[in-house]
Structure formats: structure tokens, C-alpha cells
Length: 357
Image (tube, rainbow, N blue to C red):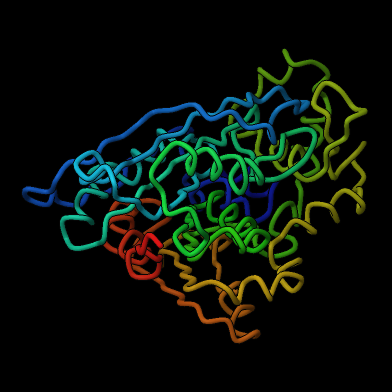
């Protein structure tokens, strides 16, 4: 992520890597291969999402999804498994996210090291503006319910899952960390354990707390989709947020409102952005959050300041909801493979129900 984008979108570390985001998959440290680890199987499938269908941006309702099946899946045809849904960050899709966490190697390593076997699902939520923010609206589409409703239904119908909340986990990183928090709060009845990795945008003001008027003026000049195509990918961050949080079905071709118009701040639009911060609405969902078996929150000590999820940890503590908060040695992305193998999957191995009742 570049400095001008940070100025345009306060706490936009959600959309990248604390001042250093690249425009594609980033290189991350690879854990050592665990000797003689049994191989998993990866299914590349397409899931149709009625929730996403009909969006004004034209984001496809047929979504790419990767399903990581444990070593015993084909050998034990009567066995059922818990499922973990893993949400990717901004700028990348599910395939790139798998590369950043070194999947399937890290699943194989975790299972070989004693983590109980589970299914891990990587859905793709990349959009015209490079990220859905896992939001729900007519412009971007309802990606919140793509995850919480359509995807779960498809996986339960087509794979041998233990189809109940106590056997489902949700994890996400960066924009996916925001998505896991948003969906995990609002749809707590669908999941048994929640893991939030280096999120952004959790607090009011986390999106567009100080939008840059010059950058907004540049975006205001877009009158056609051809104009849009001239933007560098990184410049679409504010458009992604606007498409998600301030849609306008009567304003083609982008069908969104920006928080600046003719150089003037629009407090009503900025208020919509702020209202989508999980810590702005968490108080309305406390009873559901009490149902989680476990909640984990983490961030690298060299990550950007806008991603610090300490406020989420403190909000849960205020209500007496048990959770763990970890600061580890690493930046926004470099330790993702190690975190997935040694912490994320073992966390779900400890906290999901593996009993097929």
C-alpha cells in the first residue's frame, strides 16, 4: 500500500500491508516441510451465489472456491469433518491467498503434527474494485451472505461435513480479518470458533477517517467504465469501500457515492462508512458472541498501526466474552504460513466439535 492511498483511506491497512502492499500476491516465509506428512486433496469448484447475483457492478455470482480435503477423506467414506472457512484480503483472490499461507503444505503439516483433520474452504470474493469487504449491498453484491448462507449450504450439501455451528470455524486476514469480524459478529449462530488475523477498519473512522480531497477529485472524474480502467489497481480502494458501504443505484456507471463531492465533505456518506465498523455495531450482537467456543485475535508486531485489533479484544473483554489477543514477531504478511500451520488450524482443532452426532 502506498502513502497516497493511506491518506485517501484512513486505516486502509485493511486493504493491504501497512505501507508496503504490492499489487499482487506477496512473498511469505514458508514453513519447513513436515517429513512424511500425508497429502491432502484440493478441489477447485464453482459455487453459485444467489446472494451475489444481480449486483450492479456485474460481479459474477458464480464464485471460485477451493476446498482442501484432509488425507483421510477419500480413505474413510463414512467419516464427516468440521469445516473452516478462510477469507482472503484485498487485491488478491482465493488462489493467491492459498499461496500466501502455503496451502496445502501447511494443512498437511498441521495434520501431521497432531491437529485433528478438518476441511478448509477458500472462497473468492474479489470484485471489480478488487475486494468486496464482505459487505452486503446492491452495488457490490451480498458477499456477507455468500459466505454465511450460500457457501455453507453448498459445502454442507456436497461434502461430508459435520453440518452444525459447533463444527464450523471462520478465519480471515487483512480485509478478510475485517470480513471474519463482521460476519462472525452478525452471524455468530453459524460458527463455533472465530480467528481474526491482522484486520483493519474495525473502529468508526477506520474507513475514510480523513479522505484525501485530491484523490477524491480524481475519482469524481470517472464518467465511463473506460475511465475506470485507466486507474491503477491501488487507486480503487476508496471505490471498493464506497461500493460496499455507500451504494447509489441511481448513479451509473459506478453506482456509488464518495464522501467528497466538488471538494466538499459529505458527512452523510462518511457516516455510512463509519457505521460499517464492527465496533460500531458489536453491542447489538453480544448475545450471539457469547455462544462461541473460542475467539482468537492476532497481529504482527511490525504490522501497520491501522490494523491493530486491540479495540476488538477490549470490547469483548468489556462484556466478559473470553478471547485471546496475540502479538507475534512479524509484519502484515511474512509469517502467514507459520501462523496457519502452527496456530490457526491447531486453534480450530482444539475448539471445534469433531463428534458426528
